[in-house]
Amino acid sequence: MTTRADALKLDSQDAFAKKRGEFYLPQGTIYLDGNSLGVLPKAAVARVKHAVDVEWGTDLITSWNKHGWWTLPRVIGNKIAHVIGAAPDSVVVADSISVNLFKVLSAAVAQKPTRKVILSDSGNFPSDLYVAQGLCTFMNDGHSLRVVEPEAVLDAITEDVAVVMVTETDYRSARRHDMKAVTEKAHAKGALMIWDLAHSAGAVPGRLDEVNADMAIGCTYKYLNGGPGSPAFVHVHPRLQSKVMPALVGWWGHAAPFAFGQKFEAAQSIARMQCGTQPMLSMQALDAALDVWADVDMNALYAKAQTMCRLFTEWAEARCAKFGITLYGTRQWNTRGSHVCLRHEQSYAIMQALIERKVIGDFRAPDMMRFGFAPLYNSFADVWDAVDVLHNILETEAWNKPEFLAKKSVT
Ligand SMILES: *Cc1c(COP(=O)(O)O)cnc(C)c1O
Image (tube, rainbow, N blue to C red):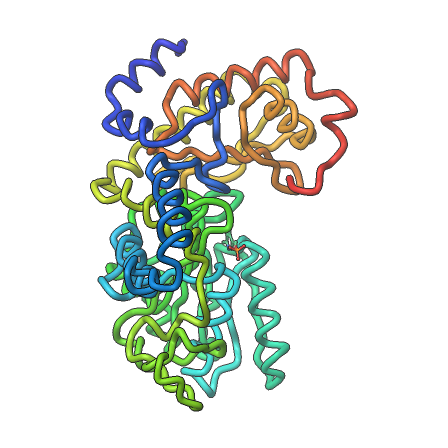
């Protein structure tokens, strides 16, 4: 029988244990929601303070040059490129995932004028599907979104598909698509390939160039710890950067923005994926947050992620299966992201009871408790203690209270 001492032993051997000190972790809280909103990196606090006091407060407009505000989205893009396995100067930070998806999707369909299908899967995050639906409605020229089961994506890539748009890591089951196989098939059938890396960036080794992806998007407030609402990233492979034209363009993507010409002429670089002015305070926090990643070995990080997911599941099943807990998704740990969904018919109330006891995860409809494991700051003791609290809540039926059963607006 495993004990807490086994978890502590794993922590003592963990090469990432020293990284934990680079983050603020609220006392007494076991935070298993880094896949939704990463914790605060200590370096971000000083950076934002400097940005407010000195850059905004004193240097004001001169900061665009003096403090590198204008180029910061591309400077940060290069730090992200390192994490997601993309070439330098192929990533820029801007806007949200949903907005960036609109840009890359519109740019991709325009490259394939004779094809009318955008292919995605039913495991995708709904916003991605909504954006594709909105684009099709807007184009009003016969384009449509085809949604198939995740397992059916490969076979559904046929010669009428303009672009395959899927998310690598499923936000509920954590199942990862085989990026190489899907990208190869898309290219073999003449389609472009867009990857959403929302639940992958900072959790699994980045492979965009290795798999020869065309474009990608992802957010920075999950595993990358950029802060609430921090701007998203967009990647375009260098071979496409001067070819693709997003439907949303603006002066930040102009070849000569300060010439203020009347006609849009796109920058011959990743800069064309920018539209307008970006939130500089958020950018500063993100830039500081990304410095934590400079020396991270992504393969080692993913190895720790897999161990955490496996142990959490094994410990939870050993102690809580008798209360009706089941795993949602595969047990092939090397084909998953870094979160685990457990099903139970009272998942919502159980999660509320967990949160009250300072074990933070989230509920995902219809019946899942989702626990994210961030290898940079979660410990194996966190994993053990979270299962311990879960077990206690189930055993005592502490979840069975009116205040836990009533749904809040953000779950
Ligand atoms: C979190 C997430 C989003 C969020 O999109 P925003 O526009 O940043 O709100 C989109 N897609 C996926 C797959 C996600 O996991």
